[in-house]
Image (cartoon, rainbow, N blue to C red; front, side, top):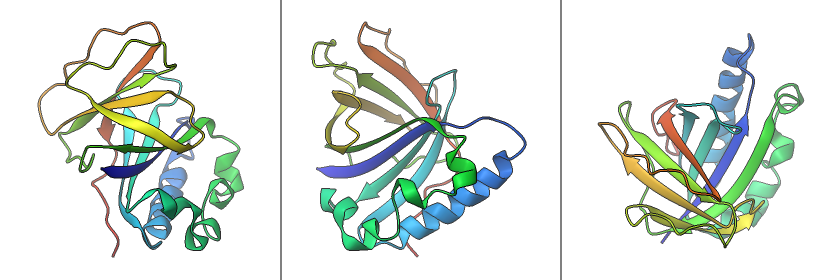
Length: 176
């Protein structure tokens, strides 16, 4: 069972995008210096979505986000106010599932299905279920399908699902 901290948001594609990316690069470096953060990668949705940006941080266990090392240096308050003011549809979910990683190379992709409630249809069999175990818990369950090449096979949307396809923004990063 692996634990992942998944942060998603919208950020406007305006002239400070380069500055935002530079900030986020430093932010990832800081997070990877915290004991228990094992990898980090950012993704961008390939189609219109309310939260088209995703960051996935693999963690040693769910306790990492309540450790003194994390709470004293990170969290929502560690985001530069200039960028934080423009970030909308911001959701943080701590998930656990039977998947070793979601690290992608340049040709990779991942598909997420969010079950918005317990009444929503079950995930397709080829998706790995990620149980929501903490933070905002904005969804009932998340399913993930990871591919390193080719085109993803996207299931037909169901009532109660949000389906998004992502590509990597950068290569996976690991603690130094």
